[in-house]
Image (cartoon, rainbow, N blue to C red; front, side, top):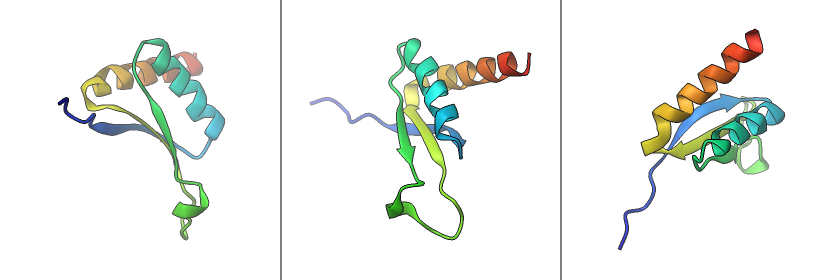
Amino acid sequence: MSEPIKWTSVYKSLNRFEAEVIKGNIENEGIPCVIINKQDSSYLSIVPGMIELHVPILHKEQALTIITQQQKEEKG
């Protein structure tokens, strides 16, 4: 029996579109990535919820590198 995948958060945003773009870039590198939408009603609280990107913990550093590269490119 295989071990369950351990996921970790690598990015948080209030902007769903931004999170989707980053998710696509991570997946283009062959890394599984999921969005956890804490803006949904089940997570409602006083503070607005975040959109979180999660990757398997084994891919955390690679995903963070991809995110950093994308942010540098956006700043130009």
